[in-house]
Length: 470
Figure (cartoon, rainbow, N blue to C red):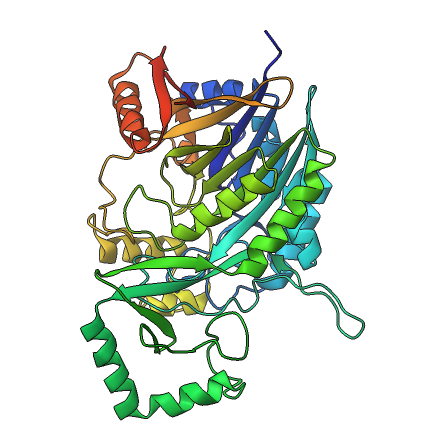
C-alpha cells in the first residue's frame, strides 16, 4: 500500500486575539490532529492590523458586520497549530481597505506563512501559492465570490476597493483580492415580465436603459460585465432595476459567474498543474443560494471548471456549514466546510460610523456595540437562506487523503464543536469531540444526510466519517 498524503483544510479562522496558550483538552487534541497531517490550510478571515490603516466604509461587504483586526501574534499561533498555508480571499480581507491588504501581506511574509487569494496586484492575488510536504508539492489558488447574497432579492454594490488590478505603463497596481463576480438572474412567469416591462415604460426607464446600452450613463451602477449592451432585452428576457428577469414556468433564481474570472482562475490551474503534485482551488462563498445545504450556482460552475482544468481538489468555505461532496472524474469537490476559529464578537474596537448605524454614540465601547447588536437580532435571527441560527449544524474538520501518486483516496471528517463555555480566552476555539459521545454520533448522522444527494459512500467508524467515491 502506498504512502498517504494527508491535507487538513479547515474553514474560516476569525482570529481577533492570540489563542496559543489555550489549555482546553479538546482544543489540544485538535492541535495534535491537525499537526498529524502533511499539510494544514485555513482561511485567514482576519486583517492583521495594529492600527496602520483606516477602516473601510463597511466591513465584510455588509453594513452591519464586524471589522476583523487581529494582532500579528495570531499568525504565530496559527503556525503553532500547524498551518503553513492560508487563503486570504474573503469578504473581510478589505475591512481596512487596500492598505490593510498590503499590511496583512507584510505580516504573513514576515511570519513565513504562504498565502493565496490577495495581493499587491491582480496577478499576485490570482496566482498559486506553493507548499512542499515530505511527499508532494501542493499548489493553492484562492478566490472570493462577489454578488447578491441571501435569496438574491437585493442588488449588490460593485466591489470598489476589493478587486485587485495589475499595473500598466501609466498607473500603479491596485492591491486587492481575487474575485469571482456573478450576476443574479431571476426566473418569473410571463405575466410578471409583462408587468415589469409596463412599469419600466411608464416610469421612462426604457430610455435610460438605452443610454446605458450605448455606453452612456457611465457613473450609474454597473450591470453585467461590459459597458455596451449589457441590458439587451428580448421577448423572454427583461432587465429591470439593474437585474435580469427571464420568463419561465416557475419562480426562482440562478447565479451566473463572470466568464473572465473563471478563465483567469483556470489559466492558473493549468499553470500549477505543470509543477505541482496536488493542485487545490478554494472559494470563499457568500453568494445567494436556494437552501441551507445547496451550493450557489456559481460555486458549482467554478468547481467543475477548476477540476476540468486539472485541479485535484476544490474546496468551498465561508458559509459556516458542512456541504455535500461531489466526485468529478475521480476528484473531490467539497461544497462547504465549517468555521474553524470564531472570535467574531470579541473585537476590541468598533469604528464610530459603525456604531452610529446601530444608533449608538461614537464613544460607545465595543461591549456596548455587541450588546446592542445581539439584543436587536435576538436569538431568532435568520440566516440569509432561512434557517434559524439555533438549528443544529454538524461541525467537523476535514482531512483529504491522497495516495503517493497524487490520486484522491478519501475524505475523513472528524466531529468537533466550538467552545462556548469556560474561560473567555477559550471561547470560539475548536474542540475535538470524544468519538464515543452523543454529539459526535449526532454529527455523523447529520453528515450522512448532507451527503445523501451525492453519489458518494459514507462510512462512520471510530467516530470519524469517511467519504469515498460511491
